[in-house]
Length: 340
Image: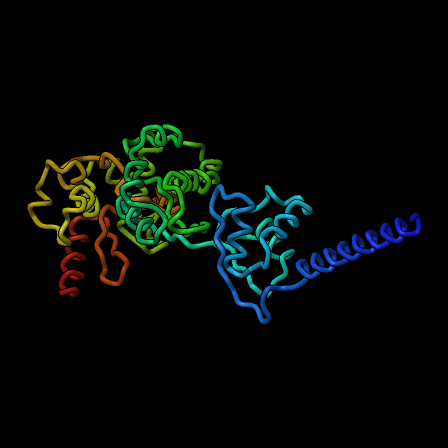
């Protein structure tokens, strides 16, 4: 009887060892083998707040792993259950699970470009953000006028015009970004980009910041020629010092808003009710007319010293600058006649 019991125990041990060996072999195969050979590329999305189990089941559904339960065990073993990042990831069905896990935990998600050029109004910026698929323009509009955000980012106006910094941003996923995150990113970037400028010249108080950003926005809209920016800023600065009207066409356009039809008419120039009409109202307009880039802001801080009081478009993207009204009128006749 004892011999039979020993035989049964030995047999049971063999079964257990065999099963353990089989489990080991399967585990090794799962860890080292890829689902497909050759593999195919798959863009896999991890949503914000997804659990590791949900991610594992998603990977199995996409054919990126062969067994979600085994992948869960791998995650526990590697202590990665709380390390999975949100975002879009470029994966392959030709990768083993260990590489899939490592990429989701420590790799870089695919980044998408949000490009905002210099000189856009806040409503144009909101539309660009929507057109590029990152957030709704209506949500951006509400945030641009949010008093809490304006106070947080020290904006001395009743909206964030002038502070939505133009830049190419790399973001995780269009269509899934939070509008507040994007607006705060643009506002934070304004202060990040101007930090060195303020370090050199002293951080402006609210009144001076208002003046500089308004002036920079006029410079941004008047010229796209880098070497002209400080000169244009110098013209406006000199005219302001002499109590001359700025007579800046882009301010009229801004005051008309989305109603502007593409042509400035005499009635627009004579419209004193437009608070942005610098042909009728002295001084700077009441607020920025776009978000200027860093070079335009620098030009406002460091305007060129010269004797020019006027400028007119030369037709090639640049301007002709004049010191007297007679010189300016001759330049206007010359270059406008050339453009006809």
